[in-house]
Image (cartoon, rainbow, N blue to C red; front, side):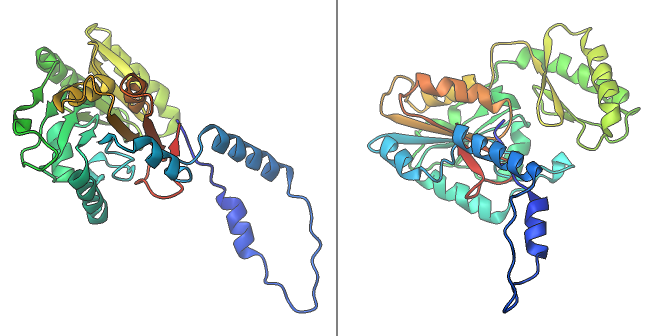
Length: 302
């Protein structure tokens, strides 16, 4: 994952430095070795993942004359990463920003969360929503100028047959996690999330063992890892990348050379969507943000 380096210790030291007094001179010393190493790492990261905002004119030039389609992750992109997943509420300012984007371009939210839960967070009926890592897709319930007349009829749930198994595993995992303080199991309808952000690090191995002990009896499910979360999903060939392709097709851009899809996300599962973008256009943009709402200096082009 792309991270923008931050060095609060160095910043605090600068902030605490005494102000220059008249007639007093200070000798300049080389920075300590730890600071030099950190700066080299930051420079290397910035070279590999330059800020998309710094090169925004290049992005605009690449999108010129093409139909932009926006795809947005939710957690860590439109809302901050928080200890309690149910408290990951987006700000009114961010909601208005997304509303403004949707007024100009077709816009979809693609999340690992349950689709209904994401909709309740975002509360914008003119968007497309793909929940459960793209396994639960629904078109807008409110018409806007960028959606087709039959957009509301767009519905796709390729993992419906797994619902009874998912429910069974949810109950089994909930019982198992009772022995691990801070662990929670989130039911995202077509997938499950075991959150361990509030679990002591020495308990992470035990948590992983407990999850795997349940899943060994369910070969039709697979386990993936995110940012302090374990994801349990059906073992079908469907992820956020497939959801992106499905949505582009639903919008009429499946074979179009005039489309410029932009995907913004912050976690490993978003990389599934990044991988399919080059197949739809020579120029494409995917952004990685740090786990906080996307702002200047916190968004990177890969």
